[in-house]
Image (tube, rainbow, N blue to C red; front, side, top):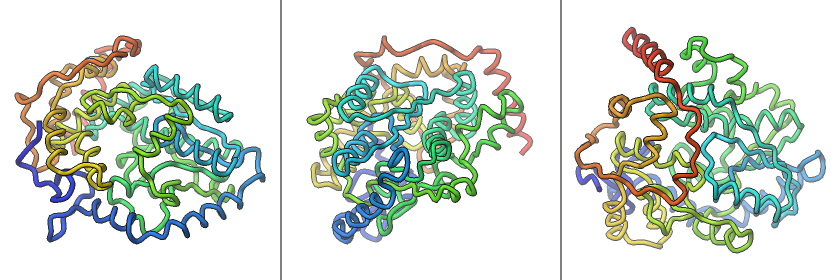
Length: 403
């Protein structure tokens, strides 16, 4: 259900509670204006020449030409496909397993790896550590994905140092969806960016202190950014492919489906026509639901706004889609509560504590979401014991009440 009290962009459907958003005198958001820069002012031919030069600078000089961090979702798969097909590079694929990969994405990973002929380095962090990180980051920030945000962006950098691979290619730039950076210049994926918005303002040392000895400090290494001196010694470049070629997720998704046999999937409370979007994680529905509680919108708003900016949907239809799909409780919430040891009442209390003004969540308007076809295949192993969760919650409350 759409929240009609929020101010929304007069062009797309993004509301005033979206991070980094501002509106101009015409009511158009800065993200839409940023897309005008992308579509009208960037010389993409020159950017492609810059990409060619960057590739040639590193090609053939190391055991691998580059690292491609890859979940085998749509964006990272496209990045990998493009670099292999366009340039014939030999990449090392680095896959960080956050603990919630769905069956179909693992099949996609196997297909893509075999069809492109690439080496894959996969890392799965300690689940007991992950549980504590999920609970702590949810308590602190209303976002349980700290381990995923930080691990995905920091662990490949450690691999780059370990195997002496200085060039790292990521997918879309953040300018595609937010206004932390602009399309004016190619976006560097560095420690500044990591601290600016990836780690939610909590670095690994902070997390160690807040967990008060519940984990071994060594367990947090994969979630910490490597020392700058080590990266400088490597003479690294960490860049977004989408800074050099125009990014279009719908077109790119069709190509990887046709060329690699990559298959889409349904996602909780997302229209089925967007079967390429965030299909890799079975906690995605919970993450979106938390955003709805905090900010009054979720993924259909994001997706329809992209379609409006690309001339594929009008605003009226977009608002209809939002009204149909947003504001539903995902069945995956039951699994999440088990994983972090919370009751649903505690979950709601924490999420509501992170609401973004002027949104006010109406719990009575929430309706049940649909269970997905592969729901029964999602792992339920490893729930956090209630006693451990209670102790962690009590420590958090004691510390926050003292501040």
